[in-house]
Image (tube, rainbow, N blue to C red):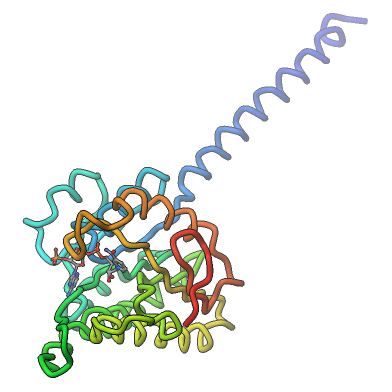
Amino acid sequence: MNLFQKTLPCIFLLSVIIISQVFLANESLAFSNDKQTILITGANRGIGLALAEKFKNEGYNVIATTRKMEKAKALSKLGVQVEILDITNQQSVNTLRDKLKNQQIDILLNNAGVGGHSTREFKDLDIDRLGKIFAVNSLGALRMSQAFIPNLDKGSKKLIASISSRMGSITENGSGGAMGYRASKTALNSFNKSLSLEFAKQGFSFVVLHPGWVKTDMTSEEATYSTEESAANLFKVISELDKQDNGKFYDLHGKSVAW
Ligand SMILES: NC(=O)c1ccc[n+]([C@@H]2O[C@H](COP(=O)([O-])OP(=O)(O)OC[C@H]3O[C@@H](n4cnc5c(N)ncnc54)[C@H](OP(=O)(O)O)[C@@H]3O)[C@@H](O)[C@H]2O)c1
């Protein structure tokens, strides 16, 4: 056996090691480029801000919106992509849609919402003021879903998750009050249920979520959860959603809520 024949097994082994190292390096590169992208509305404070932070920390590409840049200091510090958006304004929605035209989006998270006008007695209710609540909570989220369906169609998850509220459940309404807020979330739920049927064949999932009673500007310090706790639970639920969840209403623990 000459020297070449003796060293042939070693050369073969070395080649296998080098090729597998190159292959593994390419694999890990492909994985790091494979981040999911989420678009979150109303992310400059409250639950939206905590969700932006959680998704960013979990390795997502986060596009987070604010109505005004000067209100988004905490959001900007997260190192996410911050965009201006008022969901009640079609021009504002169109501007963001055009800016993100070729961007693949895997999840649209309709979080922006308002509490709003509520009175002890029906006679004191200023019905015209309820229009603003519907404009944000129901029609604003609907506007976003319509505008971003083409981006979601490019994505792998095709998920539109909307932060609703248990207060939008007709079945669970045992105390009345907050009529505009309740109905605005009921309308949001209804829109999503209809869309879940229309887009099921295209592989989309429309899910509405109750975030719990959370300490934010909308509520009070007496609320049950911190924004971080709510966001951590919502992250777990959202990241585990699949096509079978299309048209469902869940709370932050993944339990079904009655319509
Ligand atoms: N907190 C709770 O216990 C609770 C319970 C059930 C459901 N929710 C729902 O959870 C979501 C987040 O609530 P939150 O408690 O975090 O409220 P929040 O602290 O009051 O924050 C609301 C967010 O929505 C944004 N927003 C309001 N109107 C908007 C518009 N026209 N266009 C774009 N963004 C707009 C706000 O932006 P600005 O800073 O510019 O106003 C803010 O970023 C809402 O949909 C709410 O209904 C909350």
